[in-house]
Image 1 (spheres, rainbow, N blue to C red):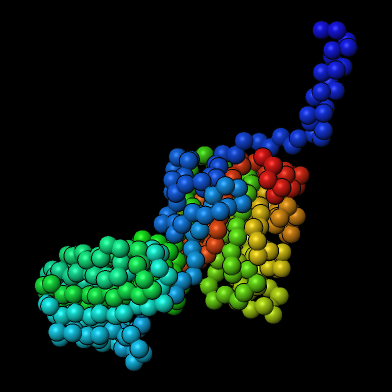
Image 2: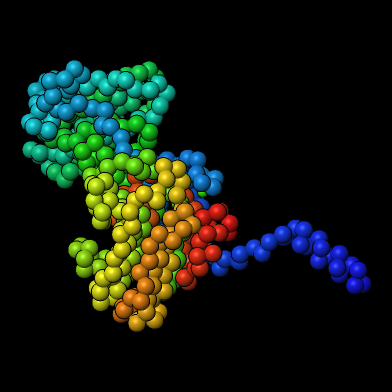
Length: 381
Ligand SMILES: [Ca+2]
């Protein structure tokens, strides 16, 4: 190679690469959420309601608020349940004898849209019973039988609307049956979970690493969220991220845990009640916590990242970044260190849900720099 061609090569290279590209390490977990089947082993996407346009390609909607379109059993409103052949309503319960029937007209539906009709049901007087759910006004008309025991069980049928209304029926076939929480919801062919008030919750993206695959003493997580609740007051918590070593029923007793959630209870509050809250408990349950005001979140896509290093037990640190900017940090933490993660969840955990879109989830084994996080927030990887 002549000196001339060497210089020429250098010029061409610098034309192609006008600035130094940041070389990010390879993530130990990466989920682009392009389909409902995660690409990484040990990962599951629990009951996503749908996929849709993401920050990059597709994203998963992990929960959304939806109205239960059915009227309460004892309401006197128009289109309330019509009870036939000995069916009765006791508070919010509907009771069906054999051949008993409860029927309700649901209107103001969008034509040619998927809806799901579901109930909790159980046999009461006998060991087993049989019920049929039917939905007239669907394409095709839908009727299905289910066997029940005395255990509460959620059953459902789904379909696509023809016009703007449908008639749903609960029909006793044999045995006596109790029905609770009938629910008619838009947007999916399965009931996504249960309704609390007028909200339904679904689970998130869960990864169960193998032993020592995710050493929680140092690491970084990076993901994108988009949610309609930004700027609103919420009565429940929003769970963004949770990683833990061992599950306990009492969340305060869970060792080696990192949690990032949001409370938007009180816009006047200057504390955790209107903030993104980071909590770390080490392997001996020694806690550190940080609350960052919610104002940093946009109604559009937001990049969220955490980076930490607890390997020096006298001087650990963890930083929270929103849209590439460090918005909070805990430094000089004295900890007992962490044990490796058994489960990592995005958008789900201890009663809280993301209730929004999740995209491009990455976990790194090491603490990334602020430049690395800036690059991730600009979509460079
Ligand atoms: Ca994606």
